[in-house]
Image 1 (cartoon, rainbow, N blue to C red):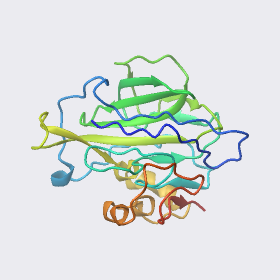
Image 2: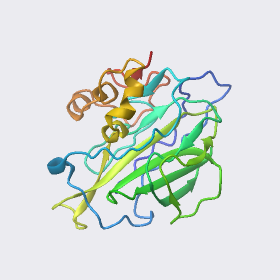
Image 3: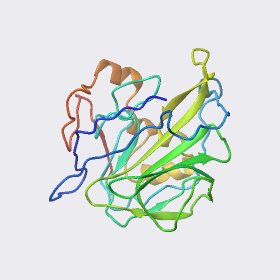
Length: 243
């Protein structure tokens, strides 16, 4: 898996802060515990609606960053580059963070604010969910099982947004492992019943939260320069605005 870091970036999303902190998120690489051997062909089978409960509370937020946005820093996979393939939620410190699926803790990393948690999905082991900047409610260890809706903790800081990423291991004939990592939008895994919460806030379709690969390729970002905040880089709208 490819690690894409832009550690010189500081950013504030959604609030006025006295200062901004560096976001030290990272993508799993060769030092990460190996993924399961499971793969899932999303091109042939489509993306299953695996999310069981929303991972946080959106009542007080006004926007969410789009998949492939120019917000924050590069967070891309082995098939795309120079784009943020996750979603930022500018929630307040202390906002509850829940397990959106039942799964197993595959990876933990202490961040400058809180802990990053990677969950391997029980129902489809080729899928993983990453939750960032969590102030843990209870101590977690790699191998711990969590259930959908379980309170994992709270958003750790008003100096950064909460963020969530999802990736899947897909079959690949070009990889020596026979598989490669593909990031997909959290909203592509969300069933209609859950997405209705966002529709009630004015987002008519999941595509409202996703910049397509073709659109991003036609409006490339510069990963050699910091992406400005809070509007982000590129000419495309980086935020989906909630009503």
